[in-house]
Length: 331
Image (tube, rainbow, N blue to C red):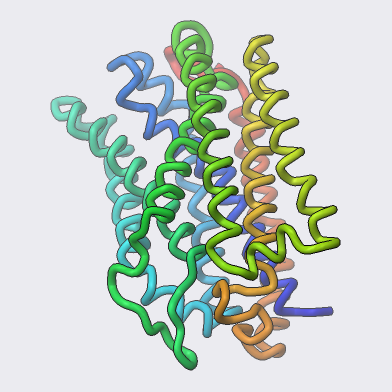
């Protein structure tokens, strides 16, 4: 068993689980200013109220797992990306405060609505910028970060930041289609169509730019015979996108959300193709960054026990709150 690679897949799963579970409620925050004050905003927040605060579990697993399983990568990546990561964490904290205070402080509801939307937007944009900065490469000398404070800021990282904002808005709108009805659902259908178009454009732009960031990326995508496998990814994206817009046209309620998750899964697969077997692109491989096997085995025992427990209670909470959200809450 290749323990470093196994742990890399565990962390990739944690990141994807976070995107799946926290992406739609961040997306609702991004869409919040476009919803009518009062009933529509209340319904949107009620749709995620029972589950939103458990979604950050996977973010903790991803960050903590990176530090424990790949300490060298953590020591390089964190100094390089301090600014967007700190911005993301502060935005998530402020957004969480706004989520709770909005219900108790009605006199300042407008302020907490603005805070909820602003925190969601900033957290999402910072996540996208972090991804873009990692993909474009980090300057490493020896075993330490050798770049400057602003190296993370580039046209490509801004593109990935904006793309993730639109992508999370797509998840949020399809979640509202699935969980609401009436005027709010009709509005969500309109937003889902627009967000879908822009998301596909953004996916295409990021996908076209990525292979030219590093020579290794280009080879992993286009070298023979790798291209026979990698060419299937954009093809599947086209198929998923066509099915997504067809499902909106037919006014399906659950399928658009599932297909939007499929688009994110394919994007994650594309990211893996570009990076693997590196963990710090172009600088440090998974094997070189890994902790000793003894540490990886010790942590793996805990992961084997805890991850199924987390998945179980997460699945149960979503099952309990599986219905539609009306004016008075779930029914």
